[in-house]
Image 1 (cartoon, rainbow, N blue to C red):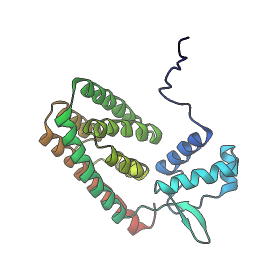
Image 2 (image 1 turned 90 degrees about the vertical axis):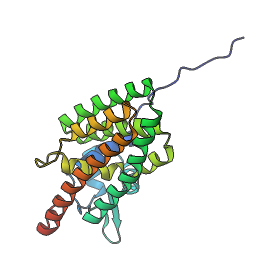
Image 3 (image 1 turned 60 degrees about the horizontal axis):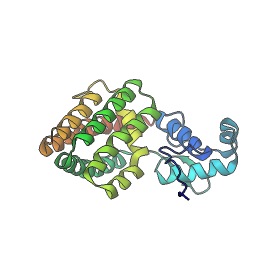
Length: 230
């Protein structure tokens, strides 16, 4: 008698908790909930139509991502992003992303190059829409291809823990008019260098992108600190 087999599920259906996490994450990244604002359970339950248990689980999950912090006596608030926080995040990104881009360029295959180009197209569409949820997903997919192609799985786990805060910075800098290069152009240069199998150019493209966005984020966060307005 032949053994029964089950078809692989390529993408499992999202749970209610996943949907609430995505909705809350997008709201924080987009600025619907401002830095320092309290996240009160009852109004959130009413707005989202879910139980307190789901809201509490979501808040704990977003706390682990660094998007929420718990203050004694106040409860959960939207985490503030300081200039020092941003610099540390960019320093970590520089170390991990340049190494991944170099290694991916060394190891790139025709199949990997096709996947990376496809991920770039989705990312460019997401950046054009400027929708927080779409930017979060498509940018994550693009970088996942780079880290997977490099074989840097542990480094990717670290980046994923920072993805929420990275997306906050990305949305902050996305509309800046004084960028040295538009975001989509930076992403295209990174993709071109990797798919061409040029590790040095891949590193340089990542560094150029991070230099550009870090300078803008630092300026905008400094202005926020002076004005006291997020």
